[in-house]
Amino acid sequence: HLVRVAGRTFSGYDKDVSLAGIGKGSTPAFTEYDIHYQYFASWEGTFTFGIKNLFNRLPVRDYRGFIEPATTNSNYLGRLFYLSYSQD
Image (cartoon, rainbow, N blue to C red; front, side, top):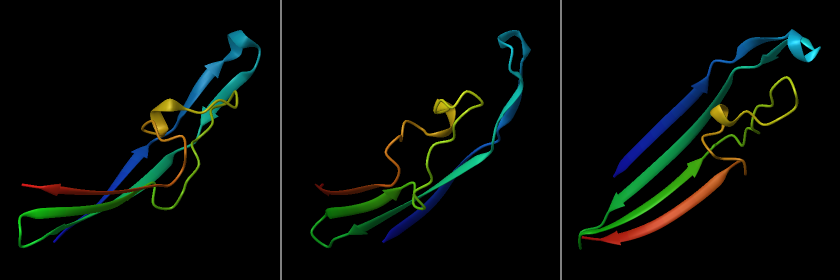
């Protein structure tokens, strides 16, 4: 058996957007967690199950209301389940 838990954190930032007439904007910090489980069968097969974005955090939006790509790891859908089997 193999269990792995991973977290990705985007620290957030402040940005001076005075040239756009907005003033100072900020993007908040964001953390997303994943869990991954593998079972190694006796016949050399491997079952894998995982959940990306375990707590279903929505992507962070920047000071303009746009999704901040650096915070999502290309996961715009929220929680994502995956399952696979491989044979060695």
